[in-house]
Image (tube, rainbow, N blue to C red):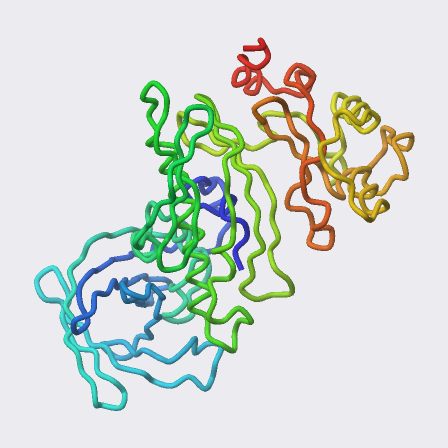
Length: 418
């Protein structure tokens, strides 16, 4: 199951070309996306073609526009076969239909014929997009290229098949305002999965780049939810649901002309040992829409022998804020010992915080709130989920020793008291 959408949005991460030579294969896979009809129903279909070790491979899948659930197709002779479920998992899957397609002009035409023989529908498709992905693994059969393991396949800006599947009818909440900026919650009508989008800005600030990023995140979340929904009953305890992605929440906590900070939380599940519980703050550059990581702004830790250790500056500030209750913004848990373990990484008290203390257990992150810098525990291991939350807040001036040059630039107004 994919994890938190922000860190999985492919458009925010570029493949490191320097690593390409380390792979055994760098096989190009050509994708062609078609739109058209199967009978009187609108569908979107993709074909994937590749050649590796002198062998040619072809795969395909499609979805009905009204349902938006991906249906894999297995290549058979000159056509494709559709089965009742994921046949590589379920050996009892049954043949549903045979799909024959022929190139006609620049499109495809053919027929969908039910295995029972009692239903037959014409198929008519026209190409709407093409892309090329890279498969680094050996392709053993046609279905081996019907996979998100290909570089670029998860990038919704490039993969129009995935984007069209995720982008359905959208509804919008009533507009709300923060610091003069308007925002709404955009919700996918089919799944109920939602995320914020900015609607207005003071002085006509360009919201295009930031809204593109916010939309890509929402579509990724919808895509994950649709994957859960499409899984067969025997393969996922979350069968028939959107994996609780529809209950995942996002709210802005700080907006200005330089940054947008969102607070997000949820518990998603599409199979596995336990749900993916998350609580975090995402920081975006308002001009470019790019994601800014907290360590790009605040020097809290350094790595030594695979451990995350507090920097000297953060060690001093951490001891101060844990000794003075005026900085505490988290309400104490009923389990005081557990709270102590959350805060001190297992140490009994602040006197035990020395240069050799190992904080790799649950390192804090920091995010810029409107009136100060907040230290929080975010996305900690599942067994310590109760530790997640905001703990301390200090002023921007007090946080200055922790700031990177980028942070000093972004927070110049706050540091100047404006």
